[in-house]
Image (cartoon, rainbow, N blue to C red; front, side):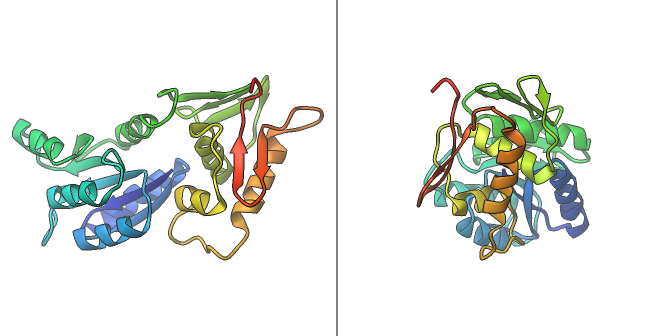
Length: 228
């Protein structure tokens, strides 16, 4: 999942981004409203962690602009981060289009829990436990297994599997996966997506197990349910 962290306090933005990357998310940062909107116009973010109080363009204006420029008014999900904690402030943020509201200072565990909850709204199951065939991923515990076999995955492989399992049966192009699972520092001219899909496929499928991953020539990859 691709996340944009927006905060004019550079150290705070980078700290939040670093923590979210440890959770396996692809994270970009922006330090002002204009920069955030520029990046959102070029990248289809799944979630924006947005500071409310910023100079020149505050979080409310950014949130309203994000909603106006998106083809899907539900996306990206917006988690407002702010030191303002009155009921009226929360109502104003939600009315501007925010999906959730977290008051600073916050515990990072609560932040990641809210991020997981918001991102699950788009998953078919709406649960931290994703299941496709005999493949199970527990987002909260950061574990994945097939049948009785635990999968030993890197952070990027886990993130890629999580995205596939959130979109079962969909054909996902290399460009789409690069945009949602990798951050802005990824080189679009490398074969990093193909290589990572290949290593993930080999870890998920061993011996005589049926492969759940399909290569759709000229279009991308699909994770299919064994029962389909």
